[in-house]
Image (cartoon, rainbow, N blue to C red):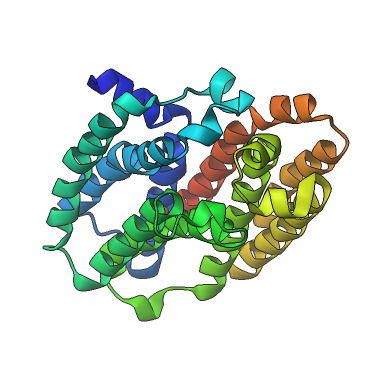
Length: 281
């Protein structure tokens, strides 16, 4: 399997999720102790741009083959990884991730703990024996936690002190990522049921899952406002409209809305980044 195929497996349309979270963590670190550039910021910026996504989505595709074959979203919007390519993808995951993890041994122990937590949550979200994505509740927890650990890792690369982590902000970020995962699981309800994969969405069904997303988003952006600025409340408005719109759609219409979801996340992430940069000026 060539590198271009591996790149497609890593979901380029989702690259900004991990990379953007890392950048925001770094910038918040700059707000805490001042701007302090280091080579590690460049090294791990590259890691969370591509190799980390190869890990997340490569493991997902290896262990989700049976579900993916029954999922229209996967077949039409992304791709299905056939069994004969699974070993090759696993080798690519090792080749692209191990060097960065080994490099992490030589950074601060504080930051290395966060890096290992990211790898743990990202890997065992899809992989046995935990396979959190097939355990309702744990699916959102593991999916959300690997994104948040990326931001915490970026922060600790700069600050190097867990005691300075703002847990209100971390909790708000977790709620946001929980909602993001739960919303993404709604278009997969039918395919997951046919494959016998229980998720938060198959457990609660469409309406209750979307209502849960609504509550989580509101709490997340209220927490963001308490941490920093009422700007976060304004940024929550598009998510409220998206969820309310989704409640009134058919499954086909919901899938069309879902296609815009990454763009909304990228837009909100960009606004937050610009806001932090403004505060740094």
